[in-house]
Length: 554
Image (cartoon, rainbow, N blue to C red):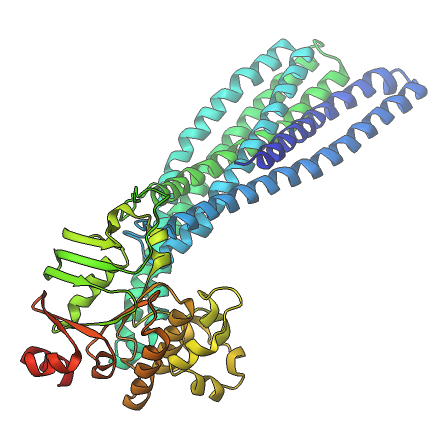
């Protein structure tokens, strides 16, 4: 935690301790008033002690209000800071945190679990307060009666131990509850994202049944956790009640026997009743800590997840220029002996006779994964030696199915562009200018979540415009026109060539089997059966390789 959090926690602890100490003093002061003023008939003394009691109540009000605010603020800020750290880990260029988690599950961890862990700060500060109240109450009881004081001092640790033991089932069931709830959220997010596809293939009933099973499992886990919490709270409350009854019974017997005065008896009974609050607070704290421990384990698993790719160690003083991207003998996942090299300023086409293998090539070029064998280099520096964030600032890989963000058309196109950049050339090159003019509010038109208010072709053109507006030194485009008609595709091919071609500081790779895009490339690398076969202009490959003709022209 940052220094501000510790300061608020300290303020909350001090004020909370003061509040609990004041609460413990109230029955003591009432007993003093009875013995010194009411029983003796001293009116002046009665007024003085009532003024003291009023001052204590003013202090109680102030300390409760500001102490509770300080600890709540600290808990909220701690949860927020943890949430930022978790989101930062998920978004880390090295990746890896998402392994084994659905997107909805990560959302649940980043919201509910971080909130529960942040609440632990509140519980710990409150624990200091209630322990202070118990200590002050025990000291007051010791002054009244050694027997009562020792009973509280010895009985309280026993109650704490029992409360801790009773919280173990709650911790276990709470972990299962959060896991099931996160899984159900992840399934729901997946269903919403693919709803259009599910409707198209008639798979909605199966998808609903899958979500229903996950939801029922989450409900069952929640009920088990709730029952565990009810048992823990009920048993702890019952034990606390028995303990307080014993304190009151012994105090009453001491009063009847004349060992303590009437005022001291009132104070003893009042202190016994006061102790209900701190002891109930300890039961609540145990429950919060149990749930917090379960959530902390889930958060820690994400934060401690190893990166999918390690950080590089290339010297900071020698950054790559971003002009030459090279694969040498790269192999893995159906690709073997893959050789590919760009030259500055060219538009390079890459045609795979098996397009399904393009996904692994994209992962290598964007360094979402490293080739199991062979080498991938940028300006002669192995990609494994480069920091992933620095690499992706130089090499932008734009998948054909890239999602749009919630917001306007303009905000989506400008998200990666340099500040103040003119978006019009990128929009025109992507063939999106006429489409944008046809929208109700043009660039200010909202696109909805993931751009679902637009057609597939419209989304693809905006995603292409976004990639072009970012203007990276090396741009890798994967099938950017699969949802676009032939006329618009030809226009986009010409626009891409005009915008990116012939610029010595910009290189473009087109991984596609579109003849229109390959025709405007300076060269085309043919990858057949997972290996590099040839590299030549489009028309030469058409004449030279039947496999190329079949993949591109059929």
